[in-house]
Length: 197
Length: 197
Image 1 (cartoon, one colour):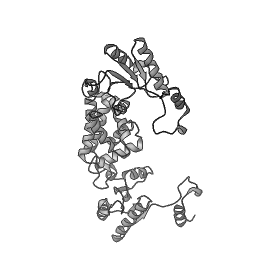
Image 2 (image 1 turned 120 degrees about the horizontal axis):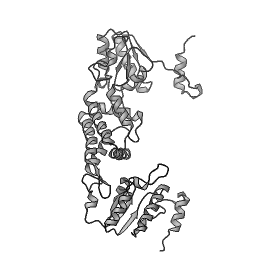
Image 3 (image 1 turned 180 degrees about the vertical axis):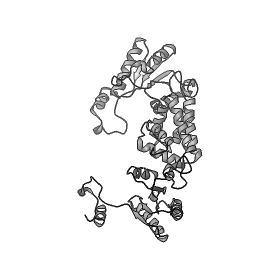
Image 4 (image 1 turned 135 degrees about the vertical axis):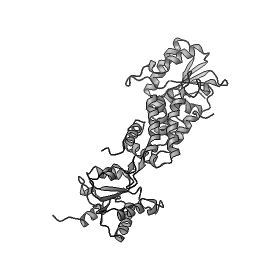
């Protein structure tokens, strides 16, 4: 005899596949759902299904979109500067700075360890895009991690070949931080990149 | 302009209500779902909806059930001893010990702080049940926490009034533990409850 009715066991299996959810939290979620109101549970199930049906990726920049092109790509007031990010969440962070250019989401970073190659990301699409569009500049905003740096270098090489102006986010000491606690690699980059006043 | 398409924002809101899921993990789950296969996402949504449609509580013991009575209550080989637990997960644990009686799930514990009264739990139903059924014994297996003890005492008083034999799980040192690390309250109970050899 199964411990839970089969329908519960199956749902626990499915929930366990979601990121950050282990067997115990999957169980707790099931308990919660069984006690929640019909409308809450059914609308959650339907929201998950319609997410998959309605949300696509923008065919130009690969941001989330419910149309073929996302609102940012369709916004004619934006400058033709492309900010290249690893993930949509990075785009969200940069949007908050009031950046008025456009984006290109790579959906990851080049990684030897995980065997992620440039063709597995939206890098070929980026190169095609800058060739076609009249792009003023590409800002490479991959993460300042070894893999992000590596990805930035690769993209930089490709853009050099086709003669497109491009830049990298400045590496330096974050505002509000204390020099004492900043790692030496960052500090070294901050000194190298110092600005004359 | 909303940061995410509205359908994503709405799903994040719904996911955040689930136990153990904060804003960051809700976002990560949405990212995962968008990249997962159609079949995986749709079957998750459908499993959540059918959970609510199909899983009910057993009308006798309040365990999960897809029929009016659960498999345990319908099992004629089980003894008429009722083990009272706070939650279904406690029932699951006790089932693993090969206990061959039946259960009664309270769906919580009496709590002054949270204003949970006996009538908010399945306690009136327990009393009615033992009055009607030919119950040999009630084992009160609420948690050995202050609130669980309090709930056990309340149930014990009720069962005394109607003259039903009842018992409480033994409190003592857990197998495999080291005396040195056991809290003094447990140790005191273990000494009080010592068994002659």
